[in-house]
Image 1 (cartoon, helix red, strand yellow):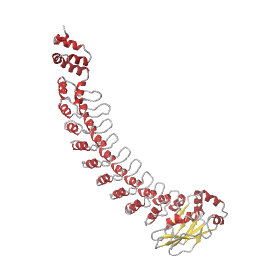
Image 2 (cartoon, rainbow, N blue to C red):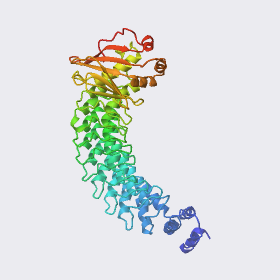
Image 3 (cartoon, helix red, strand yellow):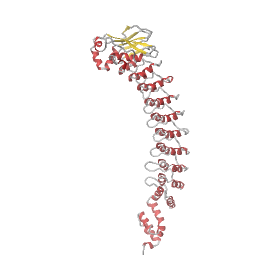
Image 4 (cartoon, rainbow, N blue to C red):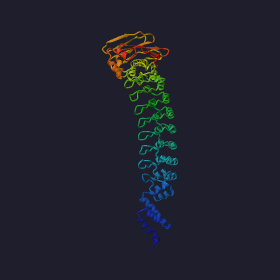
Amino acid sequence: MLLLDLPGELLLCVMDHLERAKDIHSLCLTNSHVYRQLLPALYRFNIRFQNSSALHWAARYGKLELIQTMCVYRARVNVYLHGYTPLHFAAMFGQAPVVRWLLSYDGIDVNCRGEGLGLTPLGVAVRKKDVEVVQVLLSDAHIKLNGRNDDGFTALHEATTRGYLSVAKLLLAAPGVDANVGDTCGQTALWWATKRSDEILTKRLLCEDDLDLNVVGRDGSTSLHHAVQYRNRTIARLLLCEERLDINVPDMTGWTPLVWAVHQADIDMVRLLLARDDLQLDPIFAGNASALGLAAERGHTKIVNLFLEHRDRLDINLPTQAGETPLCRAAAAGHHDVVDLLLQDPQLDVNRADLIGRSPLCWAVYAGHFNVPEHNHLDAILRACVEPACRTLSRSTGTALPLSVNSPRTDRSHNICCTGSNPTHQSTEPRGGKWLIDKPSSERQVTGHVGRSLMLLIMSEQPWLGRIGTRSKSSLRAFCTITFSASQHSCLPSLMQTSCDCVRCCMIPEAPVFPSKVD
């Protein structure tokens, strides 16, 4: 008797002793009569012993009829295979009709999370940039739009970080979406959009009501920081138009967006930021300097000039924690144009010294920034004396203000006084002893003196000058008279004398020829 001639009951008994689905499937394919009898048993075998794998296969390849048949035999629609449910597979492979049918099935979990990444079917569809599947999923009343995956990202985060504008618009249009939900670091969709310099998506996000514009990321940066750092003026304009934006938020290093703009020498961005009335110009970032101090130190003349146009909003003498003013930083860095620009401000305190007593003039000499092409042929000591004095004392009005030079390495303090107030130079020692040297003065003439203390400072920074100084048998003194021209705003060194024969012979010509103008 042939196997195929057996009654159906006996065939089912035979099938119950088969342990592999492919053996049962082979038996079903013997003829149509056996196929009709054994196929339901094959479905039940797959559901019972194979974790409804046929349902996942049908969802992947869009076999909706097979899915419906499996569900008739009570297949588990939320069962996991390789970490995903059938709804995950349908969303992953763009099977919108299958997704729609599964959502209509009772007991389906539209918010089930996949294993490993914790992605929901909506998260999978967003990653695949499948607009149709996303629309189908958003139509379900039970879907959670603000749920996070294991990375802390919502579906809106997934769309924003990948730049999927069409998907992001769908999500933002869905009721219940919260654009202010942050990831594990608190970074919102707007933060990520500006991080990517996505202008269109940023503009769309700014249309949301109650959007938080001042979210701080894990590095302390805000959306405005991103716009400034990536020089994106379009996004910067969009953000600055929002009154709720806090323009003065510092990052982890203490740098505000204004400081970043100065750091990058982006004058157009600085101009945009200065248009906001609530911009604070004076705060010290990380104890180092103000925005003006940074611009002065970097030699950004145009930015310094732009700051000075908003003089009523800043303190030009604001020091760092070390007591260094913007003038000190510009003088130390040798940015003569910036020094000249700062000196034009009537509120500038040219005598403001740092915590160890170094004035702007002392900083210029200390750093050795006295090498100007017009008088490179002059002796180094002469240039060290004349050039810093010229640049620190000169004013656009052609007059000089009182200058106090305090040497950090000696006990002397030198005061050069204005014309008309005291035509002398005074050098005072700590014990109270003092001596005066009278020099003639005129309406626009200031007599200056550089004594041993400042010269020792110069020699300490220039070893070859120090060796010459050790050969000196008498006090090393140098006098220079600076004549100020009111019309040309220039300063002309007119006299150089010394009482040290050694230095005169070795370093300074007896009849030095001075240039007609010192820049």
